[in-house]
Image (tube, rainbow, N blue to C red; front, side, top):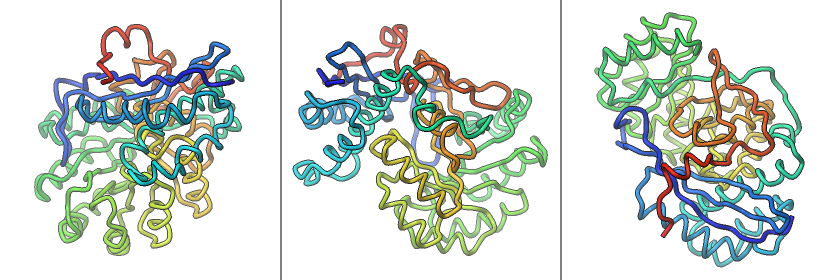
Length: 370
C-alpha cells in the first residue's frame, strides 16, 4: 500500500441547538480537521482531529498536515503504521516546533487515516484488526444533555429524557459556582434515581480549594467521577484531590502523550483514564495508554465516542475500556456512524475505522483548507 498523496480537509458541523457552553468554552460548531491518504492501488483512508471550528486555527493544522507531515509519508508503505508513527513523532525538525498541540493534532489525523486504510485493506472493521471483540456491549453515557448553558429545568428534563431513551449514564458540566452546580447536581440525581451513573465535568476551571469545597457537598449524590476538576497539567493538585475525596477523578482529553499520563499514574492522581485518539497523535499512542492503564488496573473511558468514531472500535477491542461518551454532533457525517441503541454503542460493521465522510457531509459542511 504505497502512499500516493496526503490531502487535508475541514468540515464545520453545528452542535446541538444553536450553541453550547461548558466552564471554559462556548461554541456553535465543531471542527473536523482531517487528512485523506490515497494509495497507489486506489484505497483512501480518512482520519481527523477536533477543534472549535475557527478557520485560522483549523488551517494551522491543515498546513502542518500538508507541509510538515505529508512529505514524510509519500512513497511509504501505509501498512507500516507503527514505524510511520515514530517517523513523524520523533522527527528531529518537528520536535523543535512542538511535541504537543498542532503537530500532535496533525499526526492524530494521519495515524487514524493509516489505521482506517489498514482495516480497509484487510476488509474488516478496525475492532477486528485490533484483535477482535472483547465485550458484548459498550455502554454509552450522555453528555449532550448536560451543558452549563442549559437552564436548570431543561437540564432535568433532558436527563429524564435520556434515561427514558435507554441511557444508564449521564454526565453534567460544572464550573460555574459551587452553589449553583450543587443545586443542579442534586436536581439531576433526584430526577434520574439511584440506578443511573451520574458523572460531572469541570473542564479544568476550578482551583484546588474550590474543588475541595464542592466535593464535600457533592459526595452524598454518588458521583461516578469528577472529570478535569483542575488545570489539566496539575498532577500534584489532582493527587491531593484524589486523596481528599471519595469521588473518583477522571481526566485525559487534554493530555497529548503517554508520558503525560505516566505522571498521573505514578502519583495516583487518576481513577478513570480518558485518552482521545484525535488529540494524542492517534490510535497508536492511545493504545499504549490503554495498555498502561490496564497494567495499573485502571478503567478507561475514551473521550467522546462519536466525535472520533475510532473510540467505538477501541472500546470493543481493548479490555480496559469500560464506558464511552455520547455527544452526537458529527456522527451522521460518516458512512458507518457511531450509533447508540438502547443505551449502548452498536458494533461497527463496515471495513475501516468508521471515519469516511459521506457525500452529504462534504457538500454541506466542507470549508477551505488554507
